[in-house]
Length: 463
Image 1: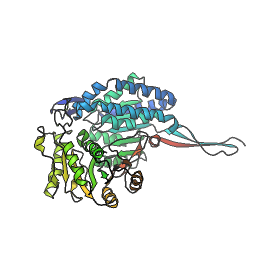
Image 2: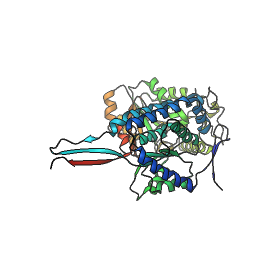
Image 3: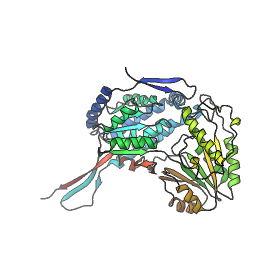
Image 4: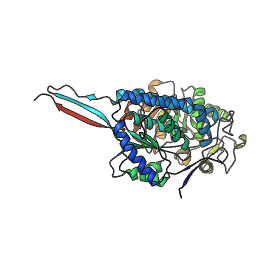
């Protein structure tokens, strides 16, 4: 009897999608097909790959309103924001398509009489992409489009919470006349996913998810000598200096902390504020948080939807309760949000002060609508606090002093450093993390490095 994938919607607890999981014969066929298709695809000129991928992007953008409904029902994002994900998907996809010719062109060595020497970027073969539910198109496009543009075949395993995303990709690529087998998807359980990583046909694994998930991927790939790209989330800090535009910082940091119910790998989870503007910042922050409307995400008036599942909301509830027991003060009254109900994924946002780094809420990833705010007395103290973390995905400073922003950024251990911005991926820049936030990079021209191998040509032209 074939096991079944069931996607339970956080909107109302109903089963929104039901699909059979792939069985071993499905996996074997997909791998064999990918290997054969990849051998042909790698010979297709880059401009032809670009035309096909561009048509697929067009097809997804054309149905963004339908996709928005699917995102809302699968993972709970308010419908008023859901279509925006397709806009971000398009931005990243088109940038990486445009960047491919330059990133993949031969790299010449200096001239040497009697020789032709250059380095060619060669496709790896089969790329296995494992994508999460929280930004289902934005996370997957970082690997899917560049892998195809580099000449690889792709097999996508999307989260069981967002399986329709994989099916949308397949439909778009088929309509764009991508050769059969170059892109495939499989609905896999955890055991089958782990076995897939060990398959000799797989040449690279691109994983976005939790630290435990990343450990599983590395363990399964150990000894295979293949590349593994890991994007594992963060505990991203922000530092508000005394010279910041406080109103602007408040507006952007509230959004950075609570958009998508805080379920963002690069969302703001801890904030350090110069003590001279601490009270002003906190007052404005709390006022704006209280303007959120928590409720049914299919209602266009809702600005904060449910978390993806009750267990995720309960984790944040527990982290918050533990901090309060340890001396933190909660500044948001959950009663202000009528939809907040224990035992459901509907969770009110929370702002904590009187926090410190002995509390898990300031150390461990929350991945939900809670943020701790601490006062600081200097840039040096802020840097020390920002670096006091096992994560290092993004960090930000809010200041009118450009020189200070650069100087502080040089001292902070992070993959991306922002000034007066947060919770954003610029496709022209490498998306990367350090420490437990992972390794490798996607996006930018550098994102093609892990999806290809260098092959040196050393040709003696005169004997």
